[in-house]
Image: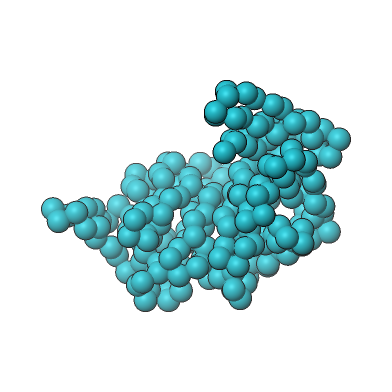
Length: 239
C-alpha cells in the first residue's frame, strides 16, 4: 500500500505511506549516480519495482517489502544516454522498456534479473522515438510515438517488433534538429484501444489493437460520434 517514487535526479528512492503520511528517502547513491537516471517504474509480480533506465547504465530494482535497491548492469547490452522511456509489464511477467534513443526494446526479467536488448534498428531509427507504452488486450505492447512516424508494436511472446505507419495522420510541431513532436505517454481505454496523450500534436492519438485484425490509428482525421463511438482510419500494416 506504499507509493514508490522513481529517482530521476534524486539520489534516493522515495517511499510514501498514505496511511500514516510517513515519507522515507532510501539512499541509492552507492549503487547508481548521476542525473536523469530513470524514467518510470513498473510493479513486478514479486513485489519489486523495476525502474526504466534513461541515463543510468543499470536497471533499477527496488524491493518494496525491504527497501532494498539493486542496480543490474546492462552496459554490455546497450549504451548511451536517453535509452528507454517508461515500461510495461507483459503477460509473461517480463518488463518491456520503450525505446527512446536506444536502437532496441529492453526486456527485463525481474525473477532472474536477466536483461535482453531486442534490436529494432532495421524497423525504426533515430532518436526520441517513443515515450510510454501500454499493454494491449492481445498481450502485445504498444509504444507511443514521440518523434517517429510510426506506432511501435512489440510481441513479448516472440520478441517480434513491428511498426504501423502514421505519417501524415498526426501533425505536430517541427523542432529543427529534433523532429516533429507528437505524443507523450499512453493509456488503455475500456474498449482496449490505446490513447496517446498529445504533446505537440494537434490531435489525440487513438490506436486500435486487440480484437481488431488490423492496427488502426486515428489522428486528426477522426472524432467521437453522436453514439459515443470513436471513428478510425485504417493503416496499412497487420500487427
